[in-house]
Every structure is written in C-alpha cells, then in structure tokens.
Length: 323
Image (tube, rainbow, N blue to C red; front, side):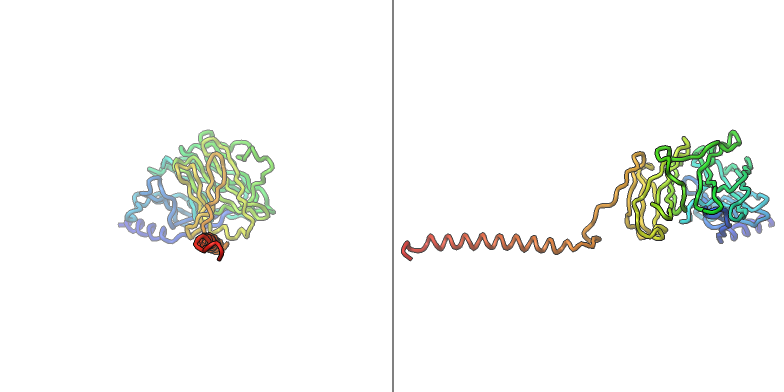
C-alpha cells in the first residue's frame, strides 16, 4: 500500500515541471515535466523531488505507468540543453542516464556535480564532482564521455568553453573542444534550440550571440571535435527564439524552421554549407504579378501590331494600282 501511494505521489509530481536555477547562462535543470525520452520513444525518464531528496522514475509513454524508480539524496534534475525545452542526459544506446545538480551560485558556482545511473536498472554508477561552474552539454553514444559547458567569466555569463570528461578514466581532459579551423572564434552566446543525429554522434545547438552573428555549434561526441557555423542574420536576435532545429537525412541535413513551420535555412553536415529556401512568389514582397501582366500586355501589343501590319499589306495588294 505504501509503495502504491509513493508511486502515485511521484507520478503526480512528475506532471508538474519545475526548473531549478543553474549557474552561467545555461538553461536550468528540470524536475518533473516531460523529462528525457529514451531511444525508441517508449520510455521517459523524470526526476522529481526537493533539494534534500530526488526520486528518479522510468515512465511508459503510452499509458504513464511507472516502470521503476529510485531515490538519490540531494537535489538533482534532468539536464536542459537549450531554452526551447530540449533536454539531454541519456546516451544514444539507452544505457546511461546523467543527472545534474542545481546548486546555486552567483555569479558562478564554485562546485558542480553530476550523477550517473544505469538507465535500465537505476543502479548507481558514479558521481562526478568538479571545481567551477559546469553544465551538461552532451554524452557520447556509448556513455563513455561527458561533454560539459564551463562558464569562465564572472562578468559575462554568456562566455563559455566546451570541455570533455572521460568517464572511464575518471578525469576532466585537458584543453577545450573548439573549432580548430577558426582559432579566433570566441565561444559566447545562449543556447536556443538543439537537434541530435539519430545515432547520437552529433549534437547541434543554435546559439544567439549578442553583438555578433548567431551560430550553430556542431559537436562530434565520438571524436571530440567541433565546428562553428556562423548564421548570416543581421536582425533582432530576439526573434531567433522562435526557431526550432531538426536533423534529417540520417543527420546529414540540419533544418531551421520558424515555429509556424516555415523554413528558414538548411545546413549540409560535413560541408557546413548554408542554403536558403527558394523565394516563392506568394511569399515575396516584390509584385511579380505586375511583371507578368506587363509581359502579357506587351505580347498582346506585339501580336496586335503584327496582325495590323499583315492586314494593311493584304488591303494594299487588293487595291488597284492607281488607287
């Protein structure tokens, strides 16, 4: 009876999402709500609780049945990876689940922690404690490498570097993950929307960048390399919050669409070439109908002139020579 009551309470708490504040400009970890969906889409993992204790549960998507749950001391949540509500923390092979703390710090946290669980059994694997302000970014498909956002500036919360943590070795790897082809690129911005390739290898994030161009950060979670693709957008970047990103064609094509569904641009993975959709007359501000009308009118005038000229010639041939 007690177990059934606890399950009902946990399920009720999961229905009400709570965002727990994080350091830097990374989105907060989440308790409750939709959690993170397992590969295949049949199970969602949700964390609910308080700063003292957190329940983690696996819920069957089709009917909301709680399949299993566990409890961890302290306040933990499912990591958010973008402000559009995208979450992460589950490896592509469905075996490793990462939880993040929501310890507060101003302007930056002095310590950050992550807990790793075996997703299929909720067996506790390990805890990662780091000095400094770190937020979850991505996980390699096999769950062996954890990628983190390290906030490095107390004056500018948008400044960050990407770091890799080797879970097998149990240590933060030296250096940062950066686009080596653009040595002068400064990592700065807010993550707006996220897309991941079907195999979990590539994590794509659109960042707004005040004072510069927005960009897509393409992270190869297998080889630990990154590419930054600048977006030639010069308008108010507040409008970019309405964009959503998706990865199609086996991850070889990225699409950015407005929430209305209208296509903004596509990016070819690998070449990173940007393509804008072809202009459609219905959506264009230029009055192409006037051009069509004038062209049609001109054709009619030319045809009319030819007919009139031919008629005059026939009349001239019909008249007597002295007329």
